[in-house]
Image (cartoon, rainbow, N blue to C red; front, side, top):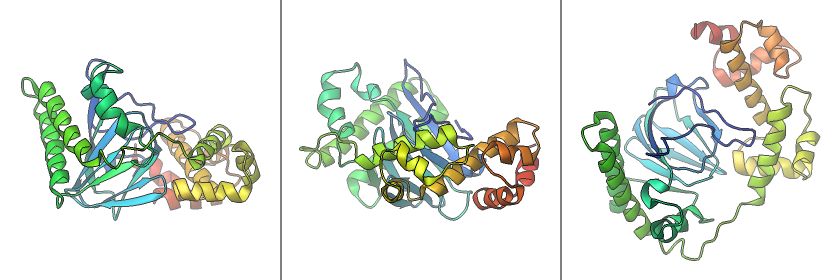
Length: 298
């Protein structure tokens, strides 16, 4: 399955339902040249995610960290963790991602499996992600399980769902055996930075088309302007203004594809006062002009 855009709520929670109630897992082939934005925007979800790079380098931004993955390497992104994914060099890179609800392995909520083997990782405050390399044996085993699940999802032979669940259970057992000591005394804790940034993002997403000032964003998060900038840098690695510009461009790209409005009207709709500046910012983020972007998709 390939999607072209990550849809999120005002606080960046992804709106896509991964899998179904009776089989809560989805497998995605992520070809970055097919994403409207050329990358996977900032988002978070309650489901766990494993990603495996197939072609060229991919960069994961997880809160304030940058992880560059080579082909054959992978990563586990924990539940409720903000992350963004971009090509390292060009958008011809490709990976696959397995996104699943913990009930796939744990069964019913509050089961012994969930409480003993899943929650300790999901609720850990110091385990936001795990970088998986084939040079480390236990991580190599997990990467092999990911390959098997991806293969089964494409072949869909009889009983493939049961096999996939079995592989994911074996994968999880390998993982928790290795990290159980690391997470033993770890309790769930949401950083002040993350809460502040989410509050600020809700404000930006609601009022992006207005004349927003840094003071407005900072007040929405109940912090000073300087602390607002520091929080954004620590969590998203951009300033509030840079995020606002990127968000306005993402909304403009949607309107370019979904409406016949003139480019100047779209620029005004998303908060730009001049067509020239809009074009300059659009090209910075999308590597083409608004008219080229519109023509390319029709």
